[in-house]
Image 1 (tube, rainbow, N blue to C red):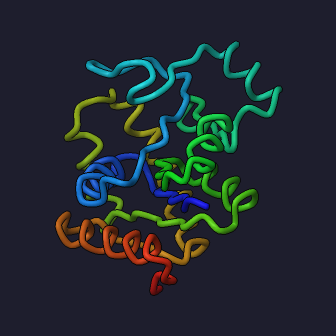
Image 2: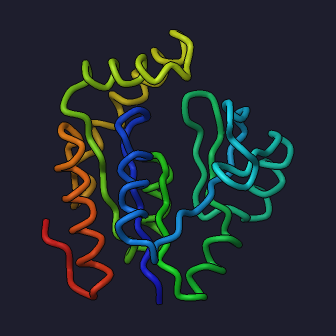
Image 3: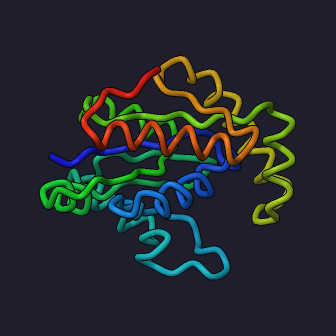
Length: 190
């Protein structure tokens, strides 16, 4: 059975950057493409970065049990399509899920063998700088994401693996080592 790797943490903490580096170094991994009700950002394509769904489509899939996990985050809905995840796992492909804390809890309940990693910022102030610096959200959205981040940061203790993304290269090394060890059949060190 393929391993499932859940990478979570607040918006703007660098999950996407760390996962991109992880995928370059361990090309056997595949990133699960989540579904969302948010609008595509510039350059994003349906089925590549996300499956962009209307609220009605999301409701239908949710009612049919079509998500392994789903969550509301900063006013938008996100979810991992059950059909996509199960197909890839059955094919023996190790899958990386980049999801929010609410979703990680749901995956933990239904897939307790999934390796869960919480990515933390060195401080809330640094997280604020990163969210503002990426320039993808207006000030109200940044404030909303920071409010959610405070609750998420309180959840760190739920995760046996926490990586502080203070120095990108160090955080990258830690994540790669953790996943590599799990892929080789070893239990990752806490």
